Image (tube, rainbow, N blue to C red; front, side, top):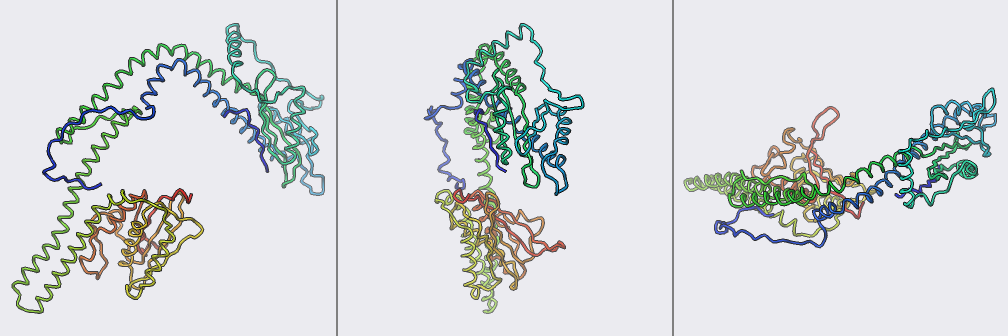
Length: 565
């Protein structure tokens, strides 16, 4: 079914840790005023207060245009829904079910339906036959005593004050260019224009019309086809005059005029209030920032003016966030240093013990085993230091390198081919890729870093999977993101460690693997890279219908590139 809508009348980072020599008291920076190329919100606020008495009327008029349009749209939508429901009811109840009989609308049944609905609906109901003949009209009800024509009563006569206010209102409204493009509706010539809508409805088109009455009001109508089994049997039209819309708009306009009368007094009060709302918060922010700089104590906090919603609120949020980020970075540096010291201490202790023992051992075979332990510890230290260096500089590198479109599907397929080509050399379970080729799995990022994430996940899955297992790679489009899944057939993850596996130096190695082979930074680095690309990564266990753990699953979600949306 086509739908014709005639709504023309609607106007519609590098880790902290400076050397001791750099920790000299910094000179207090001199305040410097900066003027941006545009007008700030604070300037707009000052201008709005001074021009409030003039701007409020125009803003109100513009707002009422949108308000009136929304009322018109709502009324048309309501008529549309009512017409659709009534058309279905007429098609079911006013048609002879016998297929051998003429499937046209039965006039008696149609009139009974209209007579019953006329007391429920405020709109006027007209139903036409397939040839365009009017069958029933809710304003002309036929009964045993003949035809009764219904005429709506005029509104009660207003009192003199209300009459004067209405005349003043009409004069003001007439100054505004409104409804000049609407076709004029009157009861005498109206049926001819309505018949055009009926003809379109008999052709299967839903027609929504807004017309202006001679008195300046609104006349809204909706015509829909009456269909049964895709056959158009007639047309149904609902119409209503827009007195309720005009009344609602008039009441709001009167309220605006009352507000406009007190605008001048409010402007004076707000101007006096503004002086205190600008200078006092800025002085408090400057004093708090100076205390934080001078004291180096966390007890000094930045006042929060975020609820203001202006530049002062933005400034307080930025200063507060900057201070909290500074303390968080310092805490992270301390934790990282403590973790590094702990992780390096373990191989160093083992190395020292092996060296001391080797100096006293005379047996060549035992000395050779001790030398092997020493070489393992040295290799472990080398891997640890390399991964620590990688983790410490990854943020800075990600911020410097440019990003380009990366096809995740091609990357997964290429990685699977690489692992397949080196299967004999590498050993272990095979790597299979399953990519949804119907979607464009393109993200904006640094291809080398994203490949590093996928290789970390693949190597982690291969290290846990048995030799006869399989590492599966899948990728698909998940809304506005690209999802990448790496699954293995290993023992799975401890239920309480699904988040901890991404912590630095976390190590949960499979049985039989040599200690010290991994530094525990691979998944942490992967999470760091994914989050720097605006994505997420999480771990879960694969389970059978019986709840048995079948392996681990890592899912990475990255924002879809704008070119692929």
